Amino acid sequence: MSGFKRPRTGFDEDQDYQKRMRRLNKPCIAVEAQAREFDQNLLQELHDKKSRQKNKETVLNLLLNYEQHYPVFDRLCSYLDISEIIALTRTCKKLSGLYKLLLHTQWNVDRRLRRFFGNPKRFRAQLGKHGALVAGDFALQFFERQVWPECDMDIIIDTKQDVLAFKKYLVDIEGYTCSSTLPLQEPNEWPDQIILTFSRFDRDQVYMKTPMIKLHSSYAIPLQYMFENAFTTSLVNIISWNKAYSIFPLPTHLQHKTYLLTGINDDVGAVLSEQSQRGWDVQDVLWQEEELCRHPIQSQRFVGDEFTWSIPFDTDDMELSLTPDSVLQYSQFGLEQHTRLVQHAESYHYRISSTIYGACTLRYKYTHSGFERNFWDEFVRDRMNRLTRLQLYQMKPEDRPPGAFDRRDFSVHEDAFEKPRNWKYYDDKVPEWYVVWKKEEAIQRGINDWQIGEVRHA
Image (cartoon, rainbow, N blue to C red):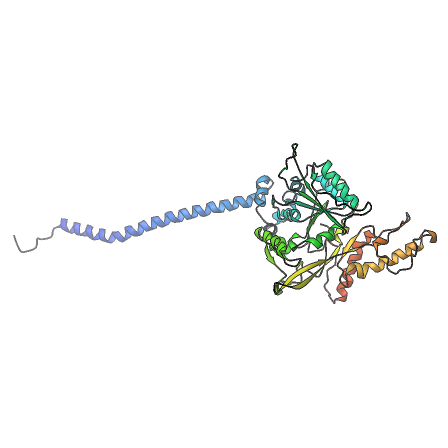
């Protein structure tokens, strides 16, 4: 075998060239593969993005064109809380009326009342006829659009005649059985406070597992009774025959906070535990940084003021109440902070102050805060006294009550007497007097950019 190298031929050179080219092409092939993989990933990502965008457009179109798919739209909105609904109303003009639209379905009081009554409108007519209010857990459930099966309904009513008439309605018309007995009293006496419990039984007298109704009556008018017996701010809600009122909506429904309205003890602690389990943060009073000028926890408030969330009801085909809405809306209450020593530590809570206000020239009873510079004591009382005195002078001396002019203050509803047919009541003047009082209050406090207006009727 020769020790010299074999001469290269043209065939060998072609093979070497092809080998070198293959080595050079390997990176290109790898890059091309990566490029193909990248393109595939990009296409998949674009497809996914398009799908997500399509889904978003589907939800958006559903919201914007709710008339075409209203049942689905209404169901979707049932999962939104009130803060989310308010946020949606601010997104575009098309959804600006979303809240008002949902009032007829999401806050349909008759639908909520069907758990208790066969004819909800007939029940609401009874509320208006007897001046009764629904309070407690049911009112809170209504605003929250929740159903807590274990909760009963609390109805607050005033006089003996109204209690007996409402009891007859629940038993004879709605089929309830009263499981409470009226306490024995003297023939002409009525207990200071009673609670009647009503349940339903089937034909075999077997207790039906439906919520009970508790009928509360006391010396106080229904609104004052509610103020005095609410443990926390989240329970200060009322339902009348034609409207619902949430007095502290900002903390209760937007922030889901609740504040104490009574001193702490084990009974109150059980209520706080229940509310905490339902999603509310429990706090005794406002922290210093929370004490905003526009917070609904103010020293003096009105039921129908700008801090209250009110919802009107459908009253078509209903017997209307003779009591105007202004009686509730212009009732005033006060809120003050209290401190006491509990278990060797200071305990803080608020207390609602409300006192009944009545006058000979007012047909209905209202509440006022009892604080200094309140609307009823400092403003209305003087006008009531002057108007009462003028009307007494229009009566014949023999028809006037004994000692009619022996006192300067006639703003005591209990001093009622038989009034002549031409006796005038001034309840219709209360809204306009409120505006005047607000203006004077603003001027006295040196507020130049004050805003006045009637208590909201919406």
